[in-house]
Length: 229
Image 1 (cartoon, rainbow, N blue to C red):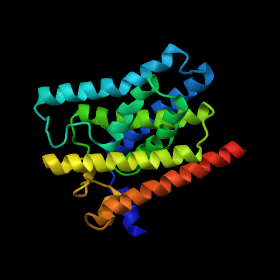
Image 2 (image 1 turned 30 degrees about the vertical axis):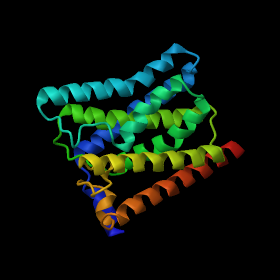
Image 3 (image 1 turned 90 degrees about the vertical axis):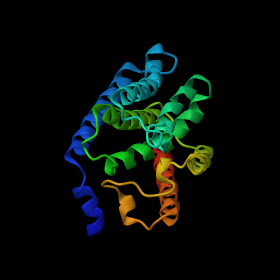
Protein backbone atom coordinates (compact mmCIF):
# COMPACT_ATOMS: atom_id res chain seq x y z
CA UNK A 1 0.00 0.00 0.00
CA UNK A 2 2.83 2.40 0.84
CA UNK A 3 4.42 1.70 -2.55
CA UNK A 4 1.17 2.55 -4.31
CA UNK A 5 0.77 5.76 -2.33
CA UNK A 6 4.35 6.70 -3.16
CA UNK A 7 3.48 6.63 -6.87
CA UNK A 8 0.72 9.18 -6.28
CA UNK A 9 2.95 11.33 -4.07
CA UNK A 10 5.64 11.35 -6.76
CA UNK A 11 3.29 12.67 -9.46
CA UNK A 12 4.67 15.97 -10.83
CA UNK A 13 2.64 19.03 -9.89
CA UNK A 14 2.45 19.95 -13.57
CA UNK A 15 0.80 16.60 -14.28
CA UNK A 16 -1.80 17.15 -11.57
CA UNK A 17 -2.58 20.65 -12.87
CA UNK A 18 -2.73 19.53 -16.51
CA UNK A 19 -4.93 16.57 -15.57
CA UNK A 20 -7.36 18.82 -13.68
CA UNK A 21 -7.54 21.26 -16.60
CA UNK A 22 -8.13 18.39 -19.03
CA UNK A 23 -10.89 16.92 -16.85
CA UNK A 24 -12.59 20.32 -16.60
CA UNK A 25 -12.51 20.74 -20.39
CA UNK A 26 -13.89 17.22 -20.90
CA UNK A 27 -16.60 17.92 -18.32
CA UNK A 28 -17.63 21.13 -20.10
CA UNK A 29 -17.74 19.34 -23.46
CA UNK A 30 -19.85 16.54 -22.02
CA UNK A 31 -22.22 19.11 -20.51
CA UNK A 32 -22.54 20.81 -23.90
CA UNK A 33 -23.11 17.36 -25.37
CA UNK A 34 -26.10 16.90 -23.09
CA UNK A 35 -27.73 20.32 -23.45
CA UNK A 36 -27.12 20.64 -27.21
CA UNK A 37 -27.96 17.04 -27.98
CA UNK A 38 -24.97 16.56 -30.28
CA UNK A 39 -25.20 13.47 -32.45
CA UNK A 40 -23.32 12.16 -35.44
CA UNK A 41 -26.22 13.32 -37.58
CA UNK A 42 -25.10 16.87 -36.81
CA UNK A 43 -21.95 18.25 -38.40
CA UNK A 44 -20.73 19.88 -35.18
CA UNK A 45 -19.67 16.57 -33.65
CA UNK A 46 -17.49 15.69 -36.64
CA UNK A 47 -15.07 18.45 -35.66
CA UNK A 48 -14.10 16.37 -32.63
CA UNK A 49 -13.09 13.50 -34.91
CA UNK A 50 -10.45 15.73 -36.50
CA UNK A 51 -9.00 17.00 -33.22
CA UNK A 52 -6.67 13.98 -32.70
CA UNK A 53 -5.19 14.55 -36.16
CA UNK A 54 -4.76 18.27 -35.47
CA UNK A 55 -2.99 17.49 -32.19
CA UNK A 56 -0.70 14.96 -33.86
CA UNK A 57 0.14 17.29 -36.76
CA UNK A 58 0.99 20.13 -34.36
CA UNK A 59 3.21 17.81 -32.33
CA UNK A 60 5.02 16.37 -35.35
CA UNK A 61 5.62 19.81 -36.90
CA UNK A 62 6.93 21.48 -33.75
CA UNK A 63 9.03 18.45 -32.78
CA UNK A 64 10.71 18.68 -36.18
CA UNK A 65 11.14 22.46 -35.95
CA UNK A 66 12.45 22.25 -32.38
CA UNK A 67 14.84 19.43 -33.22
CA UNK A 68 13.37 17.06 -30.63
CA UNK A 69 11.79 14.67 -33.13
CA UNK A 70 13.04 11.17 -32.56
CA UNK A 71 12.43 7.96 -34.47
CA UNK A 72 12.41 6.15 -31.13
CA UNK A 73 9.72 8.25 -29.43
CA UNK A 74 7.84 10.50 -31.86
CA UNK A 75 5.92 8.06 -34.04
CA UNK A 76 2.22 7.72 -33.06
CA UNK A 77 2.64 4.10 -31.99
CA UNK A 78 1.55 4.36 -28.37
CA UNK A 79 -1.74 2.64 -27.59
CA UNK A 80 -3.46 5.86 -26.54
CA UNK A 81 -2.43 7.74 -29.67
CA UNK A 82 -3.45 4.87 -31.94
CA UNK A 83 -6.83 4.71 -30.20
CA UNK A 84 -7.33 8.47 -30.33
CA UNK A 85 -6.51 8.63 -34.04
CA UNK A 86 -8.93 5.76 -34.67
CA UNK A 87 -11.77 8.25 -34.09
CA UNK A 88 -11.67 8.69 -37.87
CA UNK A 89 -13.41 5.30 -38.12
CA UNK A 90 -16.63 7.02 -36.98
CA UNK A 91 -16.85 8.23 -40.58
CA UNK A 92 -16.82 4.74 -42.07
CA UNK A 93 -18.15 2.15 -39.62
CA UNK A 94 -21.16 1.46 -37.45
CA UNK A 95 -21.14 3.97 -34.60
CA UNK A 96 -22.23 1.40 -32.03
CA UNK A 97 -19.12 -0.69 -32.66
CA UNK A 98 -16.86 2.35 -32.45
CA UNK A 99 -18.62 3.48 -29.27
CA UNK A 100 -17.80 0.11 -27.74
CA UNK A 101 -14.12 0.47 -28.63
CA UNK A 102 -13.86 3.96 -27.16
CA UNK A 103 -15.87 3.01 -24.09
CA UNK A 104 -13.37 0.32 -23.14
CA UNK A 105 -10.05 1.42 -24.68
CA UNK A 106 -10.68 5.16 -24.31
CA UNK A 107 -11.66 5.18 -20.65
CA UNK A 108 -8.93 2.68 -19.78
CA UNK A 109 -6.22 4.69 -21.55
CA UNK A 110 -7.33 7.99 -20.03
CA UNK A 111 -7.58 6.52 -16.53
CA UNK A 112 -4.10 5.02 -16.76
CA UNK A 113 -2.64 8.26 -18.14
CA UNK A 114 -4.15 10.47 -15.45
CA UNK A 115 -3.63 8.24 -12.39
CA UNK A 116 0.04 7.73 -13.23
CA UNK A 117 2.26 9.23 -15.88
CA UNK A 118 5.43 9.09 -17.93
CA UNK A 119 5.60 12.90 -17.88
CA UNK A 120 8.15 14.76 -15.75
CA UNK A 121 6.89 18.33 -16.15
CA UNK A 122 9.92 19.58 -18.06
CA UNK A 123 8.70 18.63 -21.54
CA UNK A 124 8.00 21.22 -24.27
CA UNK A 125 4.42 22.46 -24.59
CA UNK A 126 3.70 20.42 -27.71
CA UNK A 127 4.47 17.19 -25.84
CA UNK A 128 2.02 18.31 -23.14
CA UNK A 129 -0.55 19.04 -25.85
CA UNK A 130 -0.07 15.61 -27.36
CA UNK A 131 -0.25 13.69 -24.07
CA UNK A 132 -3.18 15.46 -22.43
CA UNK A 133 -4.96 16.29 -25.69
CA UNK A 134 -5.12 12.70 -26.89
CA UNK A 135 -6.10 11.33 -23.49
CA UNK A 136 -8.72 14.04 -23.03
CA UNK A 137 -10.27 13.12 -26.38
CA UNK A 138 -10.27 9.45 -25.39
CA UNK A 139 -12.08 10.22 -22.15
CA UNK A 140 -14.57 12.44 -23.97
CA UNK A 141 -15.46 9.82 -26.58
CA UNK A 142 -15.53 7.06 -23.98
CA UNK A 143 -17.95 8.88 -21.70
CA UNK A 144 -20.06 10.49 -24.44
CA UNK A 145 -20.95 7.02 -25.70
CA UNK A 146 -22.72 6.43 -22.38
CA UNK A 147 -24.56 9.74 -22.64
CA UNK A 148 -25.67 8.69 -26.12
CA UNK A 149 -27.46 5.61 -24.73
CA UNK A 150 -24.63 3.18 -25.53
CA UNK A 151 -24.48 0.17 -23.24
CA UNK A 152 -21.74 -2.43 -23.65
CA UNK A 153 -22.64 -5.84 -24.99
CA UNK A 154 -20.59 -9.00 -24.67
CA UNK A 155 -19.46 -8.63 -28.29
CA UNK A 156 -18.17 -5.10 -27.56
CA UNK A 157 -16.24 -6.40 -24.57
CA UNK A 158 -14.66 -9.33 -26.42
CA UNK A 159 -13.96 -7.28 -29.55
CA UNK A 160 -12.13 -4.65 -27.50
CA UNK A 161 -9.97 -7.25 -25.77
CA UNK A 162 -9.06 -8.88 -29.09
CA UNK A 163 -8.31 -5.54 -30.75
CA UNK A 164 -6.21 -4.37 -27.80
CA UNK A 165 -4.20 -7.60 -27.93
CA UNK A 166 -3.72 -7.28 -31.70
CA UNK A 167 -2.50 -3.68 -31.39
CA UNK A 168 -0.09 -4.66 -28.63
CA UNK A 169 1.21 -7.59 -30.68
CA UNK A 170 1.56 -5.45 -33.82
CA UNK A 171 3.51 -2.73 -32.02
CA UNK A 172 5.68 -5.36 -30.34
CA UNK A 173 6.59 -6.74 -33.77
CA UNK A 174 7.35 -3.21 -35.03
CA UNK A 175 9.57 -2.66 -31.99
CA UNK A 176 11.46 -5.87 -32.67
CA UNK A 177 12.02 -4.85 -36.30
CA UNK A 178 13.16 -1.26 -35.79
CA UNK A 179 14.61 -1.46 -32.28
CA UNK A 180 12.15 0.83 -30.48
CA UNK A 181 10.10 0.52 -27.28
CA UNK A 182 6.66 1.89 -28.16
CA UNK A 183 3.93 0.80 -25.75
CA UNK A 184 6.87 -0.24 -23.55
CA UNK A 185 6.80 -3.80 -24.81
CA UNK A 186 10.51 -4.29 -24.08
CA UNK A 187 11.24 -2.19 -21.01
CA UNK A 188 9.31 -0.29 -18.37
CA UNK A 189 8.80 3.47 -18.70
CA UNK A 190 10.35 6.01 -16.36
CA UNK A 191 8.25 8.40 -14.33
CA UNK A 192 5.68 8.17 -11.54
CA UNK A 193 3.81 5.11 -12.75
CA UNK A 194 2.77 1.75 -11.39
CA UNK A 195 5.03 -0.19 -13.73
CA UNK A 196 7.86 0.64 -11.31
CA UNK A 197 6.16 -1.68 -8.80
CA UNK A 198 5.94 -4.53 -11.29
CA UNK A 199 8.41 -7.27 -12.21
CA UNK A 200 10.73 -6.89 -15.17
CA UNK A 201 9.90 -7.73 -18.78
CA UNK A 202 8.20 -9.86 -19.94
CA UNK A 203 6.25 -10.47 -16.71
CA UNK A 204 5.26 -6.83 -16.30
CA UNK A 205 3.90 -6.69 -19.85
CA UNK A 206 1.69 -9.70 -19.16
CA UNK A 207 0.59 -8.10 -15.90
CA UNK A 208 -0.32 -4.81 -17.62
CA UNK A 209 -2.35 -6.65 -20.25
CA UNK A 210 -4.09 -8.60 -17.48
CA UNK A 211 -4.89 -5.36 -15.66
CA UNK A 212 -6.33 -3.99 -18.88
CA UNK A 213 -8.59 -7.02 -19.26
CA UNK A 214 -9.64 -6.67 -15.62
CA UNK A 215 -10.47 -2.99 -16.14
CA UNK A 216 -12.43 -3.81 -19.31
CA UNK A 217 -14.35 -6.38 -17.26
CA UNK A 218 -15.17 -3.81 -14.58
CA UNK A 219 -16.33 -1.35 -17.25
CA UNK A 220 -18.45 -4.05 -18.87
CA UNK A 221 -20.33 -4.86 -15.68
CA UNK A 222 -20.66 -1.19 -14.72
CA UNK A 223 -22.17 -0.49 -18.14
CA UNK A 224 -24.47 -3.49 -17.88
CA UNK A 225 -25.58 -2.40 -14.42
CA UNK A 226 -26.45 1.09 -15.63
CA UNK A 227 -28.47 -0.41 -18.49
CA UNK A 228 -30.42 -2.57 -16.05
CA UNK A 229 -31.23 0.50 -13.98
